[in-house]
Image (cartoon, rainbow, N blue to C red; front, side, top):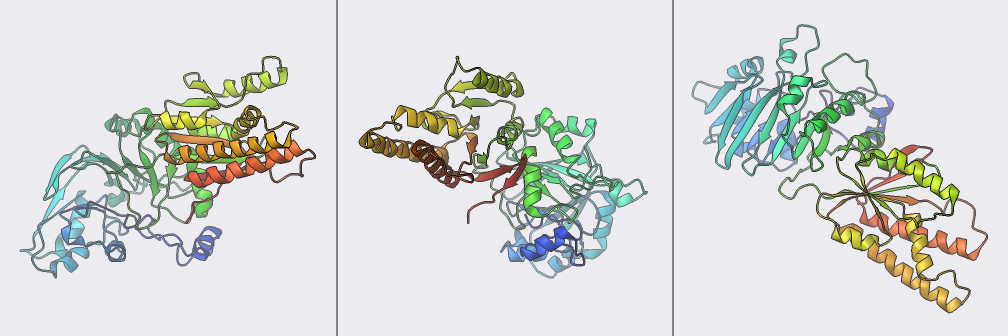
Length: 459
């Protein structure tokens, strides 16, 4: 990613809003969105793209094709063609884009320059031949018109690209919500990576051809329904501006949509695929942790709900709780009742989605099975050793599972000290389990009063 920001970057150098101030204080800076694929295909080349390539230690000498989405200056700074012409003996370059964008490029090259220009329009299919193989490019209409007669905006396109290794990318910036015809043209594409516009955050009255946190989830839902986005798709929001909330809040807003953000110069490796999601969701009683986990799981078509609690046929209040949980879950989800989570995680196939609810119940069953509540100190001490080993086994299985895991757990260490030794034992072991599982997960969210607070990643 040679840039993930909007036209003015993020933060805007002239702005003092809360979003810009937070990003500036954190030392973060995003420049105009652009991407380079395999060092061969460049998508957009704005005013900061060539400098970003230098910072990333990426040589642009190997680029054979440039795909321009439209002629706005943050996506096309055509003088790069002149800088390139000053270097002799470079391979032939093909530049593809809407007519207005291509017209902006023509006078930046000499008559004998090894550059060919190609005008494309929505619906075109291009075979981009390279020394590394053939890239198949489908051109999709963008929803970028502002209703102001802006020819460059109205001509904007998106790119559906299939690499020689058959991995697929959908590059979708700048665009507003996609209509039925655009969605239909992407049906069944099962992209490996989707790079999609998210310019305006919670500002939904902008009236421009961009997405915001109101329209983005609608577009993603439509792409999922059309099987353009699948469980395996890495959805990344780009073209980020200061109209978004600060990064931590933006990550929290994107989580339920199954989307994420990356830094400028990030590398996205489709050869290895995106790693399994291991997401620990922690919170106190009635904090909304289960509801949040279920909302995340609902982004996937097939989910296995793992119930860790014991059956209590004689407990009316418990049965009511179970019924409430069941009524929220889609009927097609599969349910597994087990306390042997380590074996389940180890035996689950790649790509399957497990929602485990919850670790508090799991720990209670482990303590029961080990006889940790015994009045005999030796028995109780041995039980603690046994349960601690089971916690370590679960953490190890979580860190190596091939499944996507959403794991709900209880925060029990922020209240009063329990009055009983058994209560203190449970609190201590629950804290140890949470700490160990946190280290095995690549996402941790703390739920407070129904609000998700992403805890970030470990260095």
